[in-house]
Amino acid sequence: MQREGSPWQGLGVVTLKELSDHLTSWRMFVLEWLVAITAVVSVYGAIQQIRDSTAEDPFLLLRLFTRGTPLPFVALLSFLVPLVSIGLGFDLVNSEHNQRTLSRVLSQPIYRDALLFGKFLAGLATMAISLLALWLLLIGVGLVTLGVPPSGEEVGRALVFLLVTIAYAGVWLALSLLLSILFRSAATAALAALGLWLFLTILWPLMMPLVASLVAPSTDDVLALLDTQLALGRISPSALFNEIAAVILDPSLRSTQQSMFAQMGLMLLERGAVPGAPIPLLQSLLVVWGQFVGLIAGTILLFVAGYVVFQRQEVRA
Amino acid sequence: MTEQLIEAKNLTKRYNGTAVVNGISFSVARGEIFGLLGPNGAGKTTTILMLLGLSDISDGQARVVGHDPVREPLAVKRRVGYLPDQVGFYDNLSAADNMRYMGRLIGLPAAERERRIAKALDHVGLAEVANRRVATFSRGMRQRLGLAEILMKEAQIAILDEPTSGLDPQATLELLDIIRGLKQHGVSVLVSSHLLDRVQSVCDRVALFNRGRIVLMGSVSELGRQVLGGATYVDIEAEGKGLADQLAAVPGVRSVETPRANCFHLLTERDVRPEVAAAVVAAGGRLMRLSVQEPSLETIYTRYFETATKEGARHAA
Image (cartoon, rainbow over all chains, first blue to last red; front, top):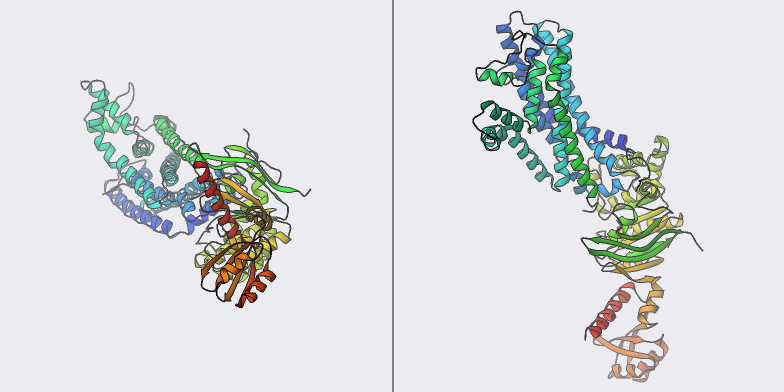
């Protein structure tokens, strides 16, 4: 049965309204400052470290992202981006129910598609704006304190990293949107989202060796066991993000497993390759293309799940 | 024949096999105020949501302004204004901003939107608080703001779900006045309520709901004749001995009730006030008050269900 009219009617209106809600809310203000302050601390640590150890490093700008004590900027983002995304998304739909505005909005000539998609787009746009501001701030501070102009290759890698971070934010936003549809109470949705976040980023990697040994066909083959462990670990978006970030921000890495094997004292060698030599951006991208697609596919899957549930939900409270 | 703006034929809604609305049929003409009356949970809101295309129709058909709400929900929603039960607004926005959002969703151009918002807010008496946040609004003000939205939409049909519930008498009167104003502008009004007497005063025709079915439909006086069989109630206050027997002997009097001393409640076949007065005086009583009761919806409703229950009991026996 064909529906009349476009599902996108009203999309722009909903997106702009939600965006203005986000940008003027106290919640966003608090979350932004939380991220900005921690970023400043981590970059300060990174700059100290780079100044102490700098020799003839051709990728100084990228080191800003990956170096630093106690937490490098990348690790910080992998931890905080989900928190901000969940903070933006956990009450997107259930607040419309609880404020009793849903039936009024849906009695206007728009489809539910526009409302849901508009809310997601506005959340993603908010995250993109904040992350872009953070990214520019970081590069600006880097330029001023390090005093070395970045190469085109470095800027390209940093840009790709920004896109990846936005995609990573998208997964968590889609997850919290789904939970805000499933749970009528905003507090329940927030707790469920935070619980999943803690589970996927902290507990799941810890459980990995155990789960892998249960799932793997034989425990004698150490490499196969490691492969299983890695594959299962990639269920967590944070694992995907960390793998992509590592390869994109370090041109000397040729495989996502390289650092893991290095920890075990093994070295991954390709025939004819010079160990530690940088590879071009395009090659780095190819290495983590699967992970990148995984992040986007996860976003789409979670959004579609939410879409299906929302379409079938009764309007009345 | 006048144009029918709403036509429902055999409309049915089932949840998990249980019919919540069970084969109802009715129509509303242009400029008519039609009341859906009945206890909570009788299926009034479900019927309204089906007419708006916000809830699927399990069986039967509906035409709203000549469109099918299932296949052409946007066309229906463009022409119908809806005031939900316990209407909600975005509390952080002002009254005018809430209306602007809806105006954008409807797709009104900016100048036209502002003109209509100012006019509608003025009409419902909220022009002075247009820029105040809705969080500070009383219940009556919220209901009026909801009506202003319908005015802004210049809808051909206004569907009001329990518009008077929870309002004080003064606010109720104001609201009913606005509803009458809608009728004068040629708008059809579908109003649902469980408060029978309030709504009786504005409705041209009513449909009484019970357990998902329309049990009675017509104008209030028609229903009175139908249910009470043309009977009239006469109230008397008089002092005197053995008055009850004297009154029962008056021709045309069916029964006499004595709710308290010196107070009599007669069910009669016609208006027998002259005869009753003569009987009281002839018995040497002092007549204090004599009045005839118009049949109220409340009486009709109670009476109908008394009879229905008795008949049900007889069938069971």
